[in-house]
Image (cartoon, rainbow, N blue to C red; front, side):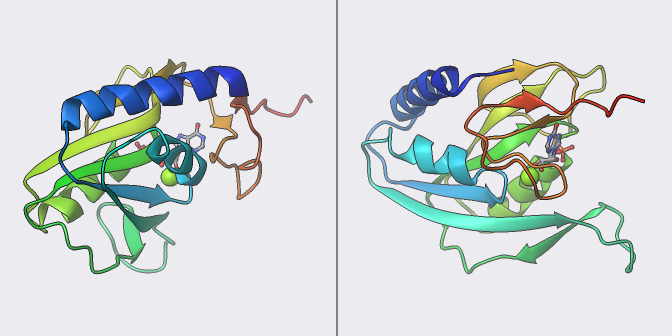
Length: 169
Ligand code: IMP
Ligand code: MG
């Protein structure tokens, strides 16, 4: 769906757009693992400002304990975000549940400003629970893998983004 060359060009553009928005402030980048690993690693190398890099990991609710949001945080480091400008980076915005959860976690640390960036945003009919200030690519409502995105833990290492086809019967 999206070649590695197109990803590379767009990530550089996003870096410039983010840099223009942030100016010369220090920036705390919060990467949502594992999906945004490659994206964040490439993106921060296009930012020539003082960057602090932090990671959070969210995983899908395992079905064994009650949870209304359907998501749990498996690890939240002691992020020092008070008064800072924070850029949250995720791989893909679909329903927005994940991003909304991370935004609220970050907001609880009382930063000065929160910006959000996703590599992909799915074109869906339903409204998303969160919005992204920076979007790499808008994609159709298909299941995609590669460049950090997985299916059951596989395909994250593909250098491009591909649609996962249903097996033919
Ligand atoms: P949301 O919480 O519905 O916005 O979904 C976002 C999360 O679901 C992402 O961080 C991904 O981990 C996962 N996800 C959603 N759509 C896809 C997809 O097409 N491929 C791989 N992962 C996806
Ligand atoms: Mg994810």
